[in-house]
Length: 361
Ligand SMILES: *Cc1c(COP(=O)(O)O)cnc(C)c1O
Image 1 (cartoon, rainbow, N blue to C red):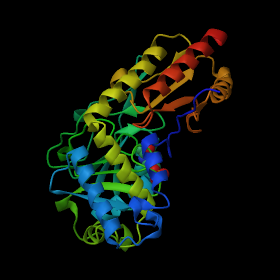
Image 2 (cartoon, rainbow, N blue to C red):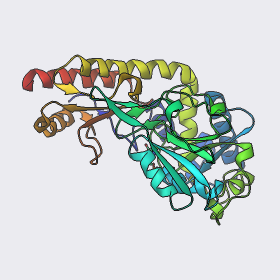
Image 3 (tube, rainbow, N blue to C red):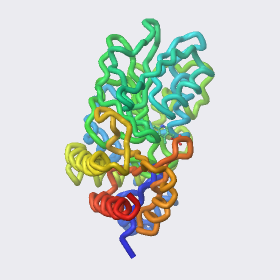
């Protein structure tokens, strides 16, 4: 039996050390004689954990003082509605950049709450998908913000350019790339991410928001989703998902211990490079994204002969490489290689891909 590697896009694998620490503390957290799942979110031990978690996240992402960190529920999809609800009136305009499924979904949801200026930014040059440069994005001069998704989890399209727009709020869905490489928080007014890709288990959503954006919310926003209420209640207006929060805290601690974003970025780039090199050097596997816009988290590819894909998936599963099937809206293969995926998982996948090509190529 080969070692098992989990390439699921989300919920996805968590660092082994984190899982072991959670397991060791499951019944008797820090020797307090209870599980952290069984206590009030108002108790001092829980609050200390929350404080430490925020502190570590601030260090990891270098979050400036004038930015607030909020934890909420409803996932990134929840934020697709929560953002315009909090920030806009019905007649306000917002720019929605579309580079794939998730950014398009955000744009569609926003149409319920505001006037959406939808901008497609992906085009094909020499049969390769490429994102047009930000300066060519046809934003509306009267828009209240620009929304985009830095890493399209399903199509594997990444936007590396740091946003530089004058007098515009930038809002970014970082669900599948947060903490994978360095970003400058100052360039954004609000970033958000569901946890289950690169932060922790599902059930909790991270929002980092510039303080001056938190005003009285618009459009009768439900209190549990109102940024101002979340802030004044330290993200505990209603009972938060305590266990998910705790696990996110363990992941932040693990990242920090292992050298922070700088170190993980190096490893992530190497992991992605190894896979893309194999794909590019073969006449058997293809990736049709321009190298500037390739995700380092979700490596998407196809087989030249699509009739072999099912066999590829069956055999890879038997080989111990799990969940390589891409989302049904796109099909093909996707290796999600978030921070927790060790480089040995990449070597195992490469070994399998070479072996498969040898037999069927
Ligand atoms: C997974 C994902 C979402 C949806 O997250 P939910 O937690 O299911 O709401 C949104 N955006 C991106 C980029 C994602 O990867």
